[in-house]
Structures are given as C-alpha cells and as structure tokens.
Length: 117
Image 1 (cartoon, rainbow, N blue to C red):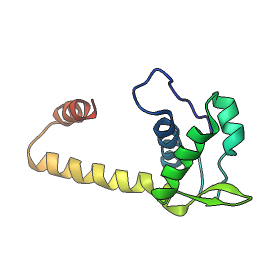
Image 2 (cartoon, one colour):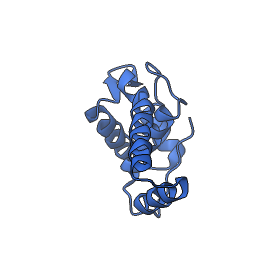
Image 3 (cartoon, one colour):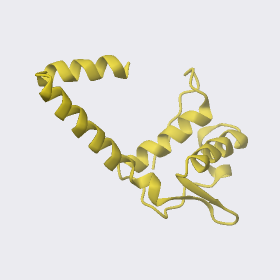
Image 4 (tube, rainbow, N blue to C red):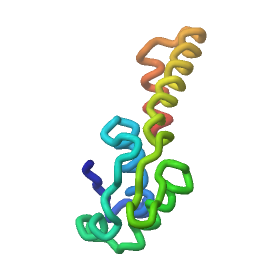
C-alpha cells in the first residue's frame, strides 16, 4: 500500500492519511486482518510527526475501520473492506433514480462531477 500526502493541501495530514487507508481498503488493496505499517515507520517514510500518524490511525479506529492492538499495531477490520460494496449500492440507487427522471448518462456524469467538486 502506497500512502501519499500533500503537505501543501488545506486538508490536515492526519485526515489525508486516514483517507488514503480508506481508499486502499475500498479498492481492495488491503484485506481485513491486514496490518497497517507501524506508526513510527510510516511517520519516518512520510516525513511527518509520529503523532500525526497516530491521530490518523485513531480516526480510523473511531470509525471502526481499524483495531489498535498493543504489540500488533493497527489491523484492518472487516468493516473497512466492505466500504466499496456500500458505495456500489448507493451508485446503483442513484442510477436507477436518474433513469426514472429521464436523465442521460452524460447528465448524470455532469451532476456527479459538479457535486464532487
């Protein structure tokens, strides 16, 4: 798993780290039960403070996406790997509703692009 952060972004570094882990789990790059890199190791590789990594891991723990285990570090939960399934269902529901409203594919794509920004 490759974690990238942008120090010039207005989004806090710990939030970027948590988002990178969420995204990797949603894309299937991480599996339930898999260990995340150690906080010290990750902090060193990203060039950030140890507490930044710990705060990102704590955010994921608070969301139920990782378990923090003494001696084992951060371990991905089953819930973290189910995120993409929920998103796929939400997209399917949106597509169904858009069809009922007579929207074209391009109309829906434009709407999503607008909302994504």
